[in-house]
Length: 345
Image (cartoon, rainbow, N blue to C red):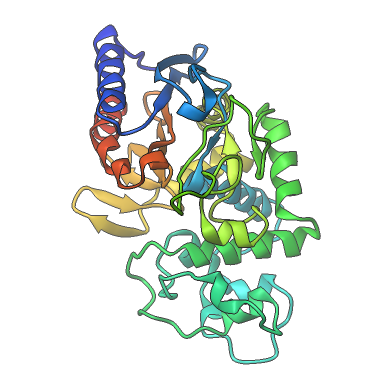
């Protein structure tokens, strides 16, 4: 049976959310939480942003979820492609991309290595360095030399950029269309790849250049921006309500013993692939904690998503903590409390 959140749980979460907003960690934020046997509930604090007037954030506020794109778009699409026989976890990524007529050191990385951040690819990703190149992006990335021996965990965005390019190639459809179709089947009607219109219901992010307009409705991630907002590692916008729907769908499929699609894929992804630090391992895309009983992921802008399959619990944090630049680090207490809360048995 699912383990419900207690009043003490939600009180602590609300108090911590209010405290980080008061400390200037973010203009405001929303926490979505629930279990597989009930409807989601929401906690909120602050305002969407000063640009949005007095608009308070709620379950329909749209956030740039940044690297949650990896687990909300790329990871489930890979699971679908594996189920359809279009991908092989242990085959090199070059097998699922347009042909490259040269040596491909980075192209030899397997789908498993890329999704688990154990590929050894170069960690720094600057797509602006490829401006003006005559070769397509997938070939430029595949031709790059490895920076490390495969097998060791190192968080690498370019691996997910390659995975996104491979998904588009094997399906003969753009990644944003693949995402749209997936999210429609899951009931996530508000989730899209950016850019999106600037409205009071869309949370602005960072002002990168003094005096310039703040990023608002466009991806905060530079590399996603260079790809038109559509990439395997970042670029998706979603709401607390949609993230709750997504988490519920994943946990319900897992609990039902679904041997195909997302249920089986979540089960397989909870197997540790490489240690990150004591107490934390990397599964397939997800970070695993509490002896792999909890899976979670963070987004650079101030978002997080937590799943606890054994207890049927989920929790999503949506903030635009990057609004203040380095104040993003101030949300660490909220993330720590979320992990502690979701790990309870």
